[in-house]
Image (cartoon, rainbow, N blue to C red):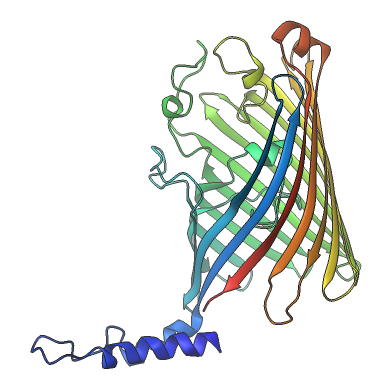
Length: 384
């Protein structure tokens, strides 16, 4: 109904706008024969807004806060312009709009790519897209995630490049991408904080491969991925993710394992601990992420997310444990409407950051925790 209303407005606006001036438009801006194209266009508007109250305790983090926050606001346009060509575009408004020095797009443009169907089994993707990383935490849009674990909370998820997917069978799909490993040149990203043995590569490139599998009539699903990227010359990051999901009528269970070995720290967690202005090297992150969802009724659903993340420095030599973070996010969704996906939610976000004796004694770190309550709504609205 909304789609028909918007199409009618587009047709009638030029007619109603006629004036008595000689230079008035005699033809509609969008010709009537092209209105059919709008039937293949989707326009979405996603919002997440909440009222939050939080406390930080530990180290120098003794403060409270109460506020309204726009956690996610984005406009998306997708469509099919040819039987074998479609596109995706998404602009997230609460992100940095500065044009990046490497890919020449601003960070708030998350998606801008073409999907070309080469054959019934092969698709070619070109443009700025999400990397084919594995795991189910990454599958959720930022609209639906109140708190990411450390890796995805600091990872660069949307980059420019090319990808191909292959539907090998009904239950197996493979993907491969060649992408920029970052959106900025190294000097713009790190400034003067560089190591003597770090140089800008000719091409900061990332190679990403993934596999999606289904078993037992789709009740058990997997998303595995392996990637290697070069952020600087001859030094990069190896990232492995193993994602698993069990689904029945009312219950979903998801478990991810993440391993990231970084010859130059790209997440910044270990780098931020160093007393001197330098980028950490030979860093490793290991994570576990678990999410359970249960639908009590058509209007109520409960969620529980649990997560841990451990960070290590100087992996090739002393393998110093720097910190482990823990997280718990219980959430209740209330969906009052049948025909529109509008969810009100109440959530608690608990995070505890436990630093090792080495980080406390040698680097002056302090363990701390965050406790936060949120009351808000999530609205992925389909406008057209």
